[in-house]
Image 1 (cartoon, rainbow, N blue to C red):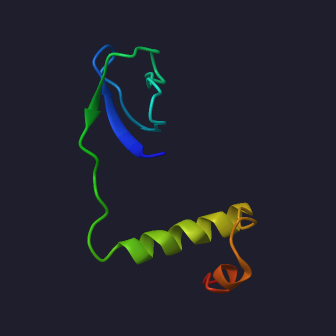
Image 2 (tube, rainbow, N blue to C red; image 1 turned 180 degrees about the vertical axis):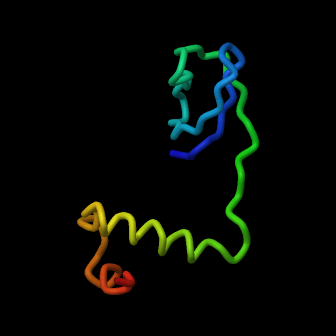
Length: 78
């Protein structure tokens, strides 16, 4: 499922959603389906590894490493 950015024309809210192929997304703020797909921001070049490391540190703090393999858990900086 791809992640898309949307802009709600009814309440002017901006948000991102995972959308299945045939699903009609709704605004989480007002429930409207009058949405416009917005241009998604991309990760800055050279920052991806730092973003992944930051996400893994946060997951480790929150205890969400059960879905990583043992070799991936070993790479997490402590």
